[in-house]
Length: 155
Image (cartoon, rainbow, N blue to C red; front, side, top):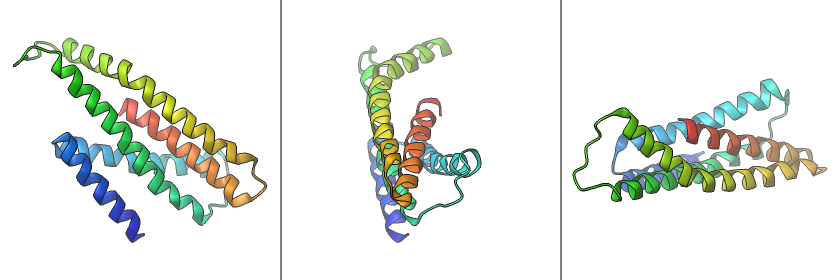
């Protein structure tokens, strides 16, 4: 458990250094933690899988890496769009901000969708394993990555 806390702390520090704001870092890490808990809820309540192998805890490391990568991509797309604006540009309305967000999501969303879906498909492919622990690990990690993508794009 100490390694998960250490990894989470190091990724938080890197996110803080990259984004330059505690606000985005806090909510990015919150989104990552919530994606694990929402995926756990789907795993237990919706899919009715009562056995939760210890191996599933590896998903904390996986989603920390994937979720923070998604945030890096979105923040970079936001900064790149900002570089196209005139120096000292101030938003006069919320529709301008919405246009910027739409542009960022259309640029970065395709890569986020592609990487998240291929990772999810890879984890769900483990469902065909005859080993129960591996099968449930694949289901849980696939759910975590899928929920992380949805929360990253909408949160």
